Length: 152
Image 1 (tube, rainbow, N blue to C red):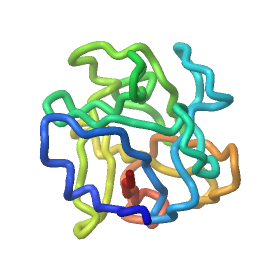
Image 2 (image 1 turned 90 degrees about the horizontal axis):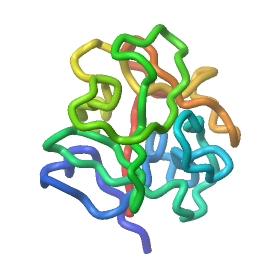
Image 3 (image 1 turned 30 degrees about the horizontal axis):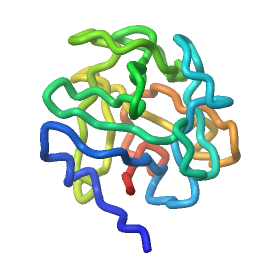
Image 4 (image 1 turned 90 degrees about the vertical axis):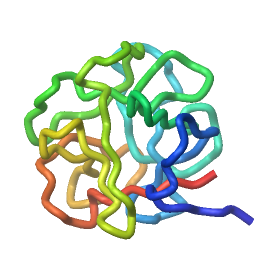
């Protein structure tokens, strides 16, 4: 049995490996396209399959979202991305604005935001969970395709 917890649980300096699910959909995960761990590889939604391409570590001190057992982090390309900018992975760089994420408890929205820019982690095409759909940056609108939960 899997235990799924809300983003409210991000309270320690480092978490063990976790998956990130769109709007509580435990069958879908943020995934690294084709399992390629290289600068610029796209982040996408895919069926949860428990591969290394879906295992993330959230570190609150630096607020990074890092691929477990790698030196790659979820990255927004620019510190102030335009609506629709696709997310990617990039080598983790301490303190870089494109990798600084903030979390809101699922009980108050479940948002993952880029710093304090009012930009949210968003699922393209109104939250379409078809495999391969793009995880993107978008102005925080309070919609359901900007809600993220995590599980073990």
